[in-house]
Amino acid sequence: MPRYCTKGGPTPLEHNQHTRHLSGATALSTTSHMLVSRPRIHPQRDRGPHALMPTHNKAPPYLRAHHMQARRLPGHPRLTISEQFLPQHPDQYFSGATPSITMAPTMAATVFRAEAFQKLNFAINNGYAPQTARNYNAAVKRYVHFAASCGVPEEHALPAPDWLLCLFAASGLGRTGPENAKNNISAIAAWHAAHNLPFTIPPQLRVIKRALRLHWPLERQQKPPRPPVSPQMIHALSDRWQHGNARERCALAIALSAWTGQMRLGELLPPNLTHVDRKRLPTRAAWSTSTRVANSSTIKLPWSKTTGFKGETVFLLHQHAQYDPTRAIIAHFSASRLMADALICEFLEDGKITMLDKQEFLAMCNNVWHGLSTIRFTGHSFRIGGTTALLRSGIQSEIVKKMGRWSSDAYLRYWRNVEELFADHASAVNWIDL
Image (cartoon, rainbow, N blue to C red; front, side, top):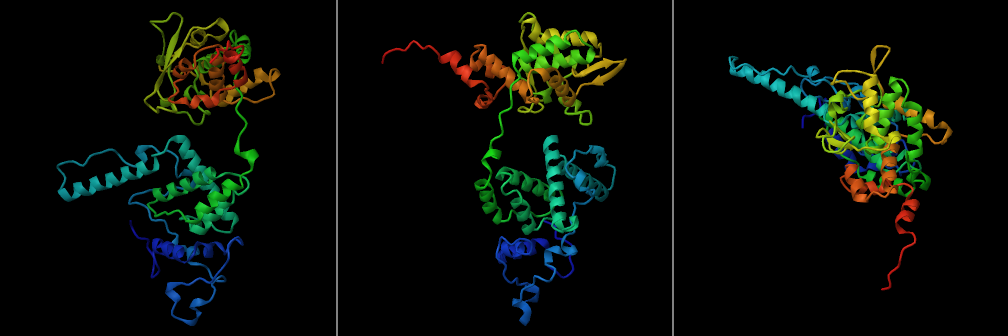
């Protein structure tokens, strides 16, 4: 591990070990009254009579600028907090060229080494799924803002001193649970890894997480279950959109495919128009009619939440007219005649190719359902609703599990209307004497 560039003082790793050897509570005591303060001994100044004197009125070593200089890998571009975990294009890091064999050996080795370091930097900063990268980025921003509210500027907050990490984790006491603190610490650890800096979890965090769990308000521990989209609601969408414009026909095709196919909306739609990853979304060429089952079709998803880019195949079986996804997709394609490489969520509007995103789609659905329910439905309500509707219709749970591409029995957590489901299968039992 490379050392920091300091003048005469200990490296941050040595200082970190020294601080933890003395007491994490001592560092915390400068900002919080929760822990008892005691004199702090500095090895550099332990020879005089003042060695045992409290040092609270002096700037502690972890607030000195020369301890906070982040050491980057060779050739690593300095990224701001807002850019740290966002995916970068490979061309920003390396050219992809291979050293020529006609070069002198030393020159070829130098070029190859530089190229290897550039690829390493790219891998470190692009090794997270997009949503994980956004979550980590937001967590680091929250940490920096929290540090600023404690009077610690960004250049002193990162690399993260133990006492500030503990304060940040404990700030959620009475509001959030230990999982939130764990995710925040993971994001900060990822920042250190991206800058090739040492990072260790303070021992106090174990106690803090236990306190977060014990004092987590019960009403915040369990979120209310997300409501399912019911057959009545799907029927309302069909009545409103089946003879509508190209945008509405596109929305109906998405709605019926997600509901009957138990799909996540993120497998069909981008979250918004500023975050469109075409590699994750199915094109028109990915849809085809079935050669084995009449009036049915399939969609080959290029990406799914559980399998990644291995993808999955979704079967869209023939249904009654108001619920038939194959019929809705054909109507959508007929209203917007585009090339085979166009996304299923794209349509023609005023002669221009337009894309439907998740935000607009849900707004359209909630607008139709305004008279049916006061609840605002989310994207996962389609997958939950499709699963529940199939079970309520008497389809065997193993078939529903296979159709929904559930890899485990986790789908049982998403059953809704379980009282009615139990009544369908366990009412008026003809009991057999034992």
